[in-house]
Image (cartoon, one colour):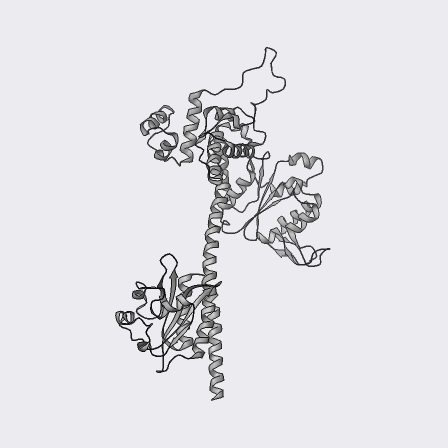
Length: 505
């Protein structure tokens, strides 16, 4: 008898362990609950099992899942808290065993009769997460004509604890996944290239061409021109888009810290290295690494980076075992690398390794026709982020931006718009919100006859640019654009025809 009991305990333990493994094998809630119910029947030797969850809005219990042929029909049944055995357990938070349900006043006969299922015995326990009852789990009809006992109640309670944790984990994962998706959308929006000028469209064409390759890319341009935006666009359009893009600012760290960041280190490699640390190249494996301000890298690190590009493997500090990596490298700089080579500050062979495909971003002053589009884009972004409802830029404000030189390029424009959206009291951003001046007069220009007038843009031209910028931001959806511009559709079509734009597109 004792041997049979031990064999039964071993079988039960094995089944519980298998159930635990099953519960952690999936985060799909429906699949998870089906596994739970099947396991409950097997462990408890029961004829059927059900899982009921509490609808917090209606304060009712509903059948989330069940075993057997009636599972879909059960999903249409709801119980009030306190109604039936399951409702009583959910309301009180106390488990219950009933050997003969037909002599139990709490038993709700209508469900068994409606489902044409003969319920004889039941064990029901609450599902509790962080002190709050979220539902109940029940098993019906112990096979063999016997009733559920205290051991069954104990096993059901243990299983219910696993179930509650698994449900909580799955729900938290769903919340985290939703937040992660939203974050991804915000990042994609923040790092989406914006512009309609011929210069910028040419850059976007180049990005589309190189994205599908694994070639190393060197992005050059003044500070604030959007080098990281272009790097992320390349990664997002590549076959590596599902893998990580790891960004490193080479100018932000000292030589020793940057070496550890890029290549990692073994535990004990230097004072303070109390654990193994993977470098950015390892973390970017199968993805892309973006090396910003590459011109600030020391000659020693340039040599190590050259080896990584040649051998496709990294050496952690303190290790003599090379680690293979499959990483696409995108580098960026605002430094004149050719001049740095002549001065002995940058390795020529590394330059040629990096400069396989070169993309040079023009300063904003070289593509002023993109200013209205960018300004509208930033107004929309910071309206959303600051819960404001600024409608756009007043004509005089847009004119002020068009006359400005923007030494800080797109980043400076973004900062100006963010500040204006936060501080503006009007529906439209006024020029007073921009503490900027006109483009400076070039040195050596003829100015003896007095100051030359600031470059001006005709009102009609400014209106044309604004209308086209709004259309671009609205995805050329004219109804939406008319709403933003507060003009009628015939007026918009007439203006587009005057600009030589096909109004039917």
